[in-house]
Length: 125
Image (cartoon, rainbow, N blue to C red; front, side):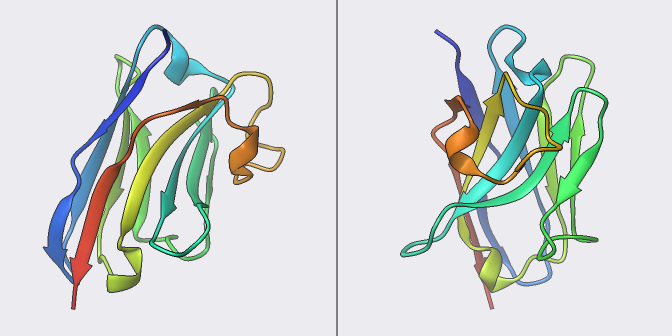
């Protein structure tokens, strides 16, 4: 069974940093498009950043210049989050989709086939 496992969440003060990791079974993280999403209590799940096989990225406006997505040689996925704000507080999820690259609706969560269980990020003011 294909799995994604997130880690690295925690509690930080505003202005701090966290680095999230996503490990995937098999070659899932070499899918056409992999992404980080987040969901705060009472809010819809929203896309944060997506990356395709060619390492082209798309960032949500709310995190540009603060968050950075990357991959290592083992195809683990990372999300470096700097200058964190209280509004970044959410459960963060790693997701992958196989049939559509990131050029098409990268932040439509219902187009993603595989999801992790999430890691909680809490930013206090």
